[in-house]
Amino acid sequence: MLCIPMTDFQRTRAMCTHAKTLVAAVAVTFTAPAGSAGGMAESTATPQTIAPRVAAHDWSGLYGGVQLAYHEPSGFSDAGFYVDDPFEAAPAGGLFAGYNFQTRAFVYGAEVLASFYEGENEAFPGEFLEHVLEVRGRAGYAFQDVLIYGALGLSSQTWSDNVGDITLNGYSAALGVDYAINDAWFVGGEVSYREVSNDAGFGFLSNEIIVREESFRLRVGYRF
Image (cartoon, rainbow, N blue to C red; front, side, top):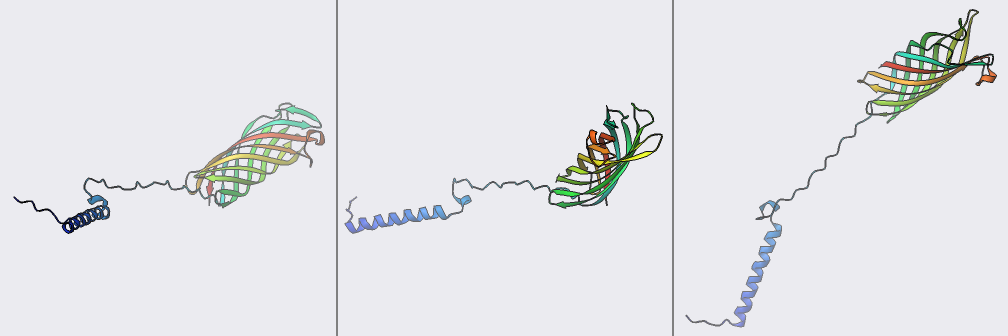
């Protein structure tokens, strides 16, 4: 077999043909779909799951309900004579009603409540502390089905003896939490402090009669 040497022109033409073939192969490789390239695994992005934000329960509107309270007087002053824990602690039934406004998670409104009970003065038999009436403002923060709130307002209570009744007026402050069972019903609990007297001021030296009292309440309410 005779070996005929290639001319320079033939050698150059062969090199160009080889280069064109290589370029075409590279182009096919980079333009083909990811799944069709031989031996190349398909690359897919993992979707990110974002948990939906749970909106706060809607507490706005008119509501009312019943409560079971436990009133525990912690101090009593009569004509400057102060006694610790003089009256019997006693349970009391009661009612409450109010109206809430809500802006996003911020809840605010007004409430009136009444408790009906009677506790006798253990240091001075024949003296009784009766009933509680409160009108107060509330403000709180709601998240999911829970409302945490604080309350501050006016409080009135009756002190009585064998002679007659005296109305004691003052203030009350409370912290509480409500839980929405569904769109209408809710339950809650709170602790409150109250100071009432038969004078405009506060403080044992400036009042003839003054009562300090803690209360614990369980509530069941309905939103209309």
